[in-house]
Length: 84
Image (cartoon, rainbow, N blue to C red; front, side):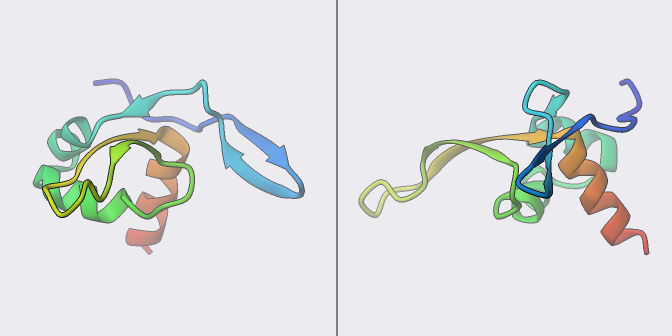
């Protein structure tokens, strides 16, 4: 798998946000890369700004089905925070 590299970032109102057209990772891809469970990756990224969430997170008491797509810039931020 290719190295994440530096994500292009856009300036939105004085704050930096990940490029929405850059590389996006699935939880499974990151789980394989970081040798963690997919559930651990979901917990790590589910509430992070910039992560694309598709689906219903609370479908009337049934199990939540939410697809995550995680931008490379968010992956880099979490990696930097966790390796300090």
